[in-house]
Length: 280
Image (cartoon, rainbow, N blue to C red; front, top):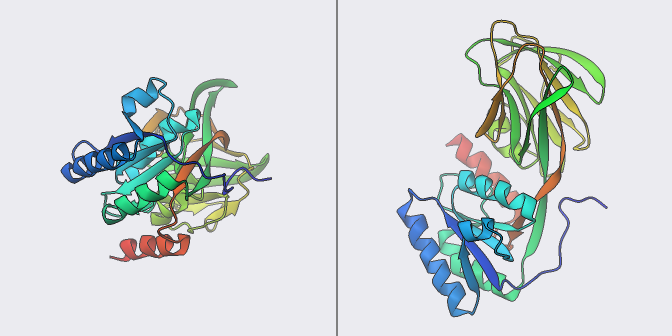
């Protein structure tokens, strides 16, 4: 049975973690309001530091935008703690709840009337002469690029050498990341669990268009560029500079992220919102 998209038995939230984007006053206020609602219902509330120190919780609420939620989700993935995003960003495609829906969402959590949406992650491994030198897990995408020079990258999928990509880089994204950077680079949005490969601003490419492959596939990208050192960048935040001849292996991570879905917005409506924001 697939690990992703699987409904889990609902569990009433009795212990809850809270975190917020510190430079957004409205997010801080809403977090305080959520604390009051939860505590008035008898739910124990903890801050993010307490959760990271090992305090067991049923879920963590993240107040901010998609960036705040991504950061929180990556921290919770090794702990198998579900995350709910409350949107105070511009797009907030990953956030399941708006500020106006907060009270309704908390009531749903307290009743256990939500579902868990499990999302696959990617694991990137950088190797040099068969020695692993860096490893990272990403929820959205792993980019090989980030240089101010044209790159030459060798692409291999499931052991089959496809050729080279000459351009700004290559984005390897999950279905979660298909509506983020990969979409802005011309990739498809998908609600199916898969891996999306998007060459970025290419001069010449073995891929004539973005490719959609099984999430179980292995992608290898080798840096053949002699005059530039690109980066392997995970979710736009964690990076590692790649030497000439160094290979980045990208596979499905053993970790998953669980998003709390209170059912207030349909997947199709979220997708429509994402397209609308990019047209604006």
